[in-house]
Image (cartoon, rainbow, N blue to C red):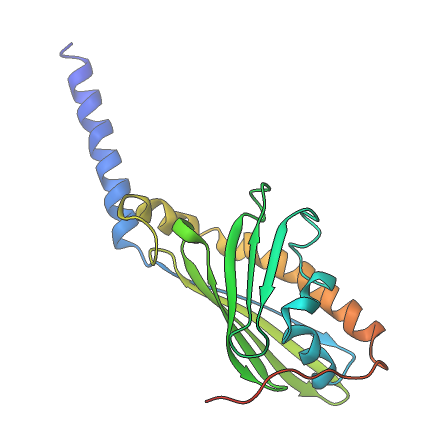
Amino acid sequence: MSVLKPFVSVLFAIVVLVIAGGYLLPSTVHVERDIVIDAPPEQVYALLSDFSSWEGWSPWAALDPNAEMTISGSGLGQTMSWASDNPKVGQGTQTIVALDAPNALTTHLEFGDMGVADATFTLLPEADQTRVVWTLDSDMREGVPLLAQPINTYFGFLMDSMVGNDYEVGLQNLKNLAESNASAPLALTGVENG
């Protein structure tokens, strides 16, 4: 028994340090990917500013075609809710919180106990093309139960590789869709807000 006591004490100290570290380490996450699309900003913006168009390019739509998807409203305040048994899709809501046609779009995401995030698309004209920059910003502790916050903080260190890969797939899908629709009429959604 006396041999186990130091071992258990060291193990306990390590567990306490790991948990404390989860509260002390930075909790903010920034993921960013970009792509150049051979289409004007207005054409690309039309595919981003209406959730009804996302099924054609979203990296998560193909993961579970049977996911329950609900879209309500339009323009600023439009909301998309989803629920899937696939853990890579999960459940949550996304709301358009800022529109600046055809330059930028920001959405707010809520994943229940898994936290919240903000995603922004910035469209930058480059000659006859458009550079699309897709970012995700999150505080990995915000909206998360207190006891799960250390785990979520550590999980934040994996976000760039996990979400970044999905963003790369989504941007390539967006590029393919926008370039195939480059001659289609525009349906620009959104009003400027500051």
